[in-house]
Image (cartoon, rainbow, N blue to C red; front, side, top):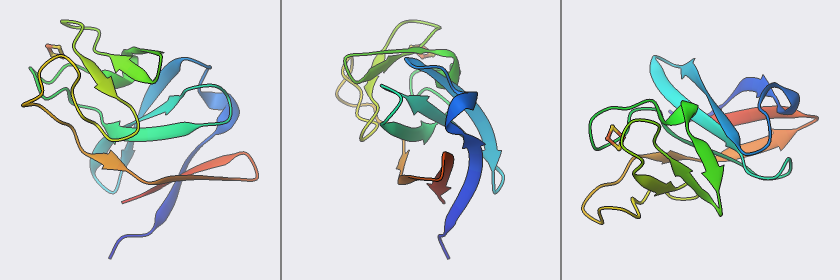
Length: 102
Ligand code: FES
């Protein structure tokens, strides 16, 4: 059964960056778009498993640090190759705590 799991404080992730966490055995990358909106995707890039959590976020997309494929942080769709997608996870922020549903 899916439920929200606290993974980090909002201050743990710099604006425009991401960070990967192990949540219930999955590697999930959480992104800070603008200090108010946070999103979560599978950390492994659908192209060749690059670490999306180390990518930078620009205009609502995270850029994979390996070959620069871009993913929409809100839904995990790949903007570089429309056949690719990574899983997205629901996120809530409560009292500066980021929680991911998984
Ligand atoms: S591994 Fe992410 S773009 Fe190639």
